[in-house]
Image (cartoon, rainbow, N blue to C red; front, side, top):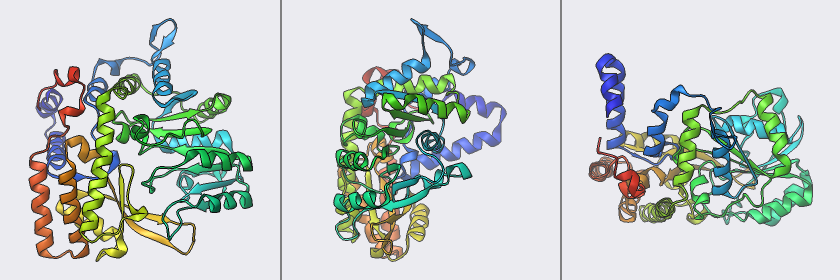
Length: 413
């Protein structure tokens, strides 16, 4: 790794950090979507001579690099308009709020998502929650419709961070239209699966769609906004007023390249494997004594109810981290304000990228389930040994998920 050798030659402290991080990534299993490996093509571009360029470079016929990237976003996701000027999904979310709402508006949101991004007086809204039915653990669309008609929101937000099943976006669009609300869907953790056609896309139905371009998409750190043509002016104006003037050249180039990769069969097969692994993981966790929230998964996400664990979510997260398994925790709201689920979230995106197979997922799931149900020394040793065995045979990124032309020029590092 040439860049690492350069660092080693003059900065021992920083080099030591790199070495420890490389080791951590190799000997642990991450089930955190944001820790999915970046495409080698993107990584190469972001570390190239393009760092010395400005994003105003003209590619021909008056098109800029930003134009190309946005055109590819529209092509991959089937959008009417796309813009990519923000670095984080938080910033993109505030752009959408300011474009579509005014202070004091009613905002109806799944699990109250996006409320955490409202960090100023100008973003003070009346948030109304909707969630899964606590019994069926799926959406009761009649109840959601009733909530919308009662509260008459200006904006309905569907951000399924804690919902692992397929969503009928057409029904949400129908409800939004009936109450005169905008529909905003966030795809940050399912953007790749949606682009590959593995999950239903909201782009046809939603007024606005936001997504992170790293993690699930394995691209550079950035956020994109897709919208209907009639909202393009409002979105761009909101970006400009917020001081978002675009990404730097390496980011734009890397994103354009990643979008090109996402059109290949290799990427589509990867996304199918992600879902197969998630189903296998869920099966294993159930065999280990866990209860799966929503009774399964159609995506990358598996969520367990900690009522069936010996410890709460935070403790479970810490114990798993000590063994070498990294997860996220969640507080899953429901349609009943008195009922919420303390949960642990697993995403199969990173482990699939490394080449884990369904059989291994089922094995690790069962071992995790038994450990969380009874975190004694025997179950701890069993799980630790399994993690060591599995990770010893996994690369940072399985070459089968690379285009042949890319794999041919990449050497082991």
